[in-house]
Length: 427
Image (cartoon, rainbow, N blue to C red):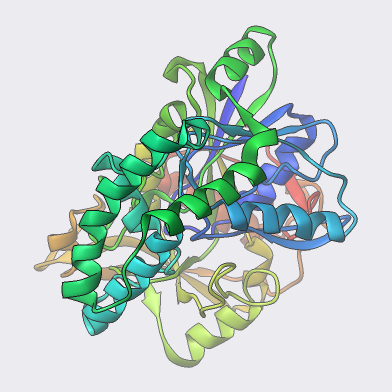
């Protein structure tokens, strides 16, 4: 069976933990989109890890970890991650890389950095990982697929020449930076070929056989619904689809094979980067939640930037779950809220004097003001609790209130960062 694990909100919902947990009973874990611009934090028997490219199932010796064709593949970063986890005692994972995946080039990172500097105060809050220039090249059909590393030298160099002719115009006249050369880019590609060659595979054919054999497969998404380029808070979004539906494309499987969609939802809100964030809080209130949140505070796994903080947003989450096609909600970091006397929950948006529960397009979202309901807190530590009925009454009331508001079943409740700190609800 194929299960997708995706985010309902702005990312950082805890997808890494849920993937790592479900990988225990899975055979294959696939990254199907995005690149090294976001990270999944994992805490398990080996320690604490921030994965940026590797799927979050690499810590089991029975799993195969796949980099799908939809991923923005930064080969040096992938292999640095492999070396890093091996140095911490993790057995060498079995990894396959799609021959149809495209590669992030060093000049993508440069263009990302140059453009953010040029935009200055009007930048998109990029992690400067080269993701937007990479996807721009992919869809302009001037990117480099892994398969092209194995082409003959002459046609590959001919393509490089065509590609960098365009790049050099921008480097010279817009950014005033050093130019690219055919030999320099070719040498980089040959270094990448040597690194990736042992792992290259026709992933869609591999998965076709795995599905026929009844293997358990996880699709691991990056970021969340609010960062989808079509359905999110455009233009402050990422450059690939963050939705479960794209998992079929980014992995190379039929869409009807995705039977279960676990959408990960945080018990409060957080975001990294620019963009509309209706339930955002500021000052001491935000600092306290940020300090207590996540595991060791709410800071970006990739950038280390302090995350923007907010109360739970039912409007955004209901919408995020809907466009994901949610079958199950995994509700995370609930234990963080145990210090509060009462907990505000955003249940609607006021736009031009009218209250709505429907998530609007960005032009209207800019005008939205949060409408809150306050629920009583439970004022106690809930880590270590393993049965739902053993949670404090106000804690259960909080979960059930949100479940009713968003309209999707909360079947898993995470009450700590560890792999097995999870409560299953029978729905």
